[in-house]
Image (cartoon, helix red, strand yellow):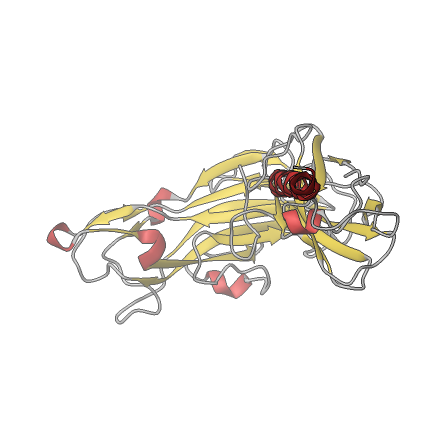
Length: 346
């Protein structure tokens, strides 16, 4: 018995060690272990800053810079987070252009945010942005001590010194069995500005000022009068029917033309109807159509006095005036949802 027990004890010892080892392996498989172990060599956020200096107003483009305190051999991607302090509406008042990417062996990345101007006057608003890392693998490449800062920015109301004139003519034309079609797509009006002195609606081109003509083929036609670009005096805004896709179909629907006159960021915002005595019929050809002829009408009258614009209708009834602007050369505006981000958010 002593000889047998001499071998049994070591065997039992190794069996127990084996069971314990297997149990430890199973426990290790269940534990969540980091991909890498953070230590003092892993990068920390050094700064998250806004590059723009000075007052920020709607329409400004904002540039954010993220800096790490040391480079690593892999890229890092930081996703912007809109914080609850934000009173602007993403997609309407601003858009974030992408993420911040820091390339391998670099320590800096940038992000652009576009803010948009709108017509209405409003109080200052707030934009608060922070960052996060969504990739699990990338989270283990930086120190767990990283704190993602929040940048809060006050965005002021933009008051433009310019007078904006948008010329509209959108109405549906019913061609019976052929269907219903919008004039905004199938008819082309041009908006022209002439001096009031010597103006004759039967020969309006004789006093055309030669600049600011809205003749792009777009709807609406967009004219933006800046202070100092035209001499002080009185001017006439009129339209010319360039082409009409409904001509020849015998339709008798009228196509009224309106001008929307406003100053961005102020309460000056009016709609003015054309002179009804010169309203265009949907069957009439435009100047560029076969058998076409000049078809013109007065939309509005504008008086310029320094940086102030006063707008009247075709009967010389004043509709309102813009606030005087001090800017001699207005900066470009970024406006939402028109051609190339140059329209209006509402």
